[in-house]
Image (cartoon, rainbow, N blue to C red; front, side, top):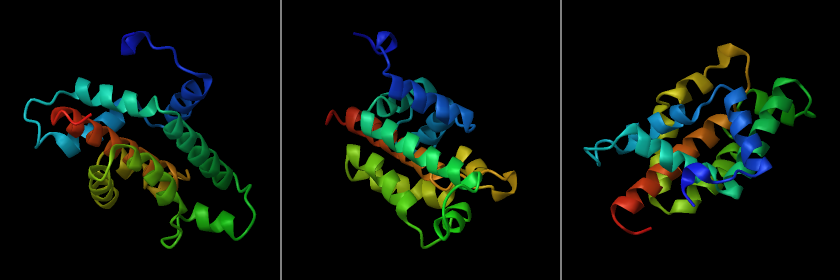
Amino acid sequence: MSEEKRIMSKIEQAARKWLEERGVTIEDIAELVYYLQSKYHPNLQIEECIRNVDRVIAKREVQNAILTGIQLDKLAESGLLDEPLQTTIKNDEGLYGIDEILALSIVNIYGSIGFTNYGYVDKEKPGILKYLNDKSSGKCHTFLDDIVGAIAAAASSRLAHRAANTE
């Protein structure tokens, strides 16, 4: 069955919808993949990046991370978490690493190259990650920025493995 004709589960549909509702498109994530991989793949096209992002999001554990992270961000944004967790998540405090731990569950799917890709985009904050880290919007993206970076890192790793014929 071709990727285009694949039937999405309700969970995958919800994960994709929630990403879009929070201002993140598949193309935004694909641009991060291109940013990470274009110097290693001179003929890389954005369509290949989109395909790899789609395949990563097709994995149930990624969908679960998306839904969990976005839900926690929305609860914090609405002030619905108990203290001290409310303030910790709302302010994206530096020593709160659970957002990164959730993201690493995504990165881990495609091996160690994903860790370096994730660390790099997490530090540099290119593209959509700059928007997600902008606290002036009033939105809480404590989990989402890491999840988006992790999806891009995993898709980059998938692309690299496929180019090396190791997947």
